[in-house]
Image (cartoon, rainbow, N blue to C red; front, side):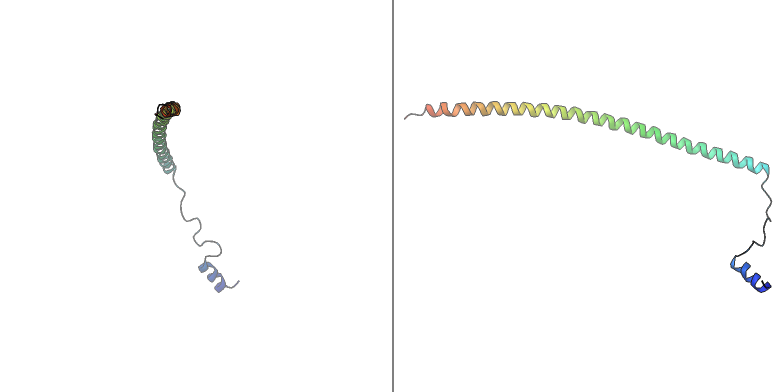
Length: 108
């Protein structure tokens, strides 16, 4: 490969990098600081997760109480509906029996 072709390859980003290994590795104290920062960030994140879980538990309890109340309301509505059916049935029977009796009282 000619020097010109080699130069063009480098300009296009092909081939090995020009400045390979120029940076120095980080010092041990940088690792310690990075580790402490990472642990503190994880602790903060877990604290937020715990708060969210507690909030969800409270909401779940509220929804449970609401569902129990709806169940009680439905039970009461069934009883009222059954009572109304009984009253309507009784009134229907009374009216059914009263019509022939009232027509028999009519003067001929």
